[in-house]
Image (cartoon, rainbow, N blue to C red; front, side):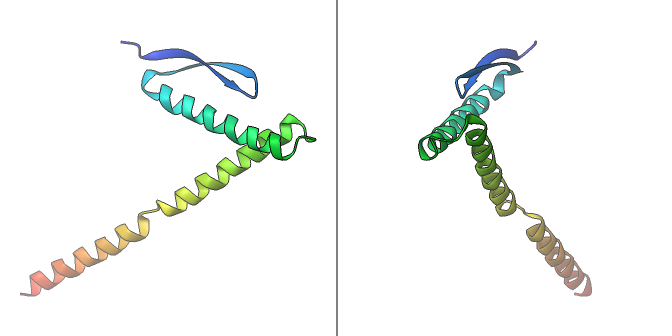
Length: 96
């Protein structure tokens, strides 16, 4: 069964037809909504600027947020620590 779906997202008054997986529709729509809200914020804050600048600022803000979340969700140090503890426990139990 093909679960592709055709949707149209509107960003900065421009329509973007997309073919996506049905399960991803909510994410795409929420992303477009968030992007439009950020663009609106920059449009209000800098009305003299052109739309490209608003989009770039919104994209930059989104990238910064993503970078913070990526660093916050980095579990590698914890996995390394847990792995080391497991090895220490295994070694201790072997000695007993």
